[in-house]
Length: 342
Ligand SMILES: [Zn+2]
Ligand SMILES: [Zn+2]
Image: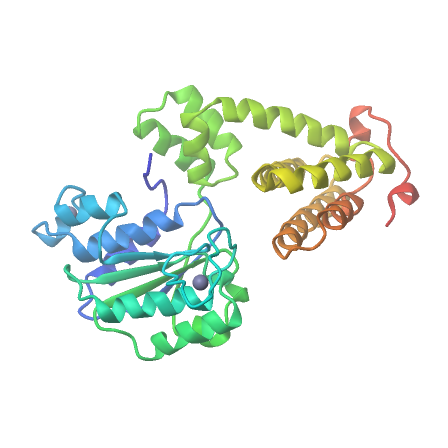
């Protein structure tokens, strides 16, 4: 199900932008994944192209433009993402459907399509997601487009790491922060979309304030059970000794070779685990600081893995940086600090 939950202020801002005589040429939706960023960008596309009258009825969700946009098949709404979208290939160019970056050939392909094909609606909207996956060459090529923007075109850059974008690109975008959504708002949104109260409550509680995650959980509650099991495993590993942690890191690295998504999901679960610790902070300030360090370690492991650092190293380092004996207060054996020091 594709629905936006939360983000009221941001949606008002998008509405105001769509009503401008000359909307900005480039927006940057900056905020964490799974919060509804893509849907917000598509809502802007609908606002700009909806055929309903009067203006207040837009987006109607029902006209041809709105329907095509929702189906992601509107010819004026283009989505540039990692892989090979817009890559023209040819001339000895190796195909790269599994690439994790947005490459210069794709940016060139996009610019070519934009200049070659006239658009049929009122506005063209180009989503670039995640914008921080553009390399320097791709980014510089895009920058030329930003310097001489095509008419009636809005570029929407989406990124959880806006600081990783070139300053020259960021400065040409109007930045709209996308925030996490409070649990209560998510639960209410889920109920409004027909989920029963208990499932809505539970999914909202597990979703780390990310509506897309909550929708996935509510639609498939089994996922929450799996996550519950993984969380229990995290608690076990966090309270174990260095040798056991290294065994776990090794297992995870082994799995990385076969199923990257699975490992990235497990890192999400680690994040949930440490965010929980941070909220509860049973040991007061020190425990909160430990949890924050652990969260940083998870984030770094994720970007190391994405940057193709040797998986075993990245994961061992993460486990080594986790605080020692997290569960000591709950009666699990606590290893000494020295034992776990890197
Ligand atoms: Zn419409
Ligand atoms: Zn290519």
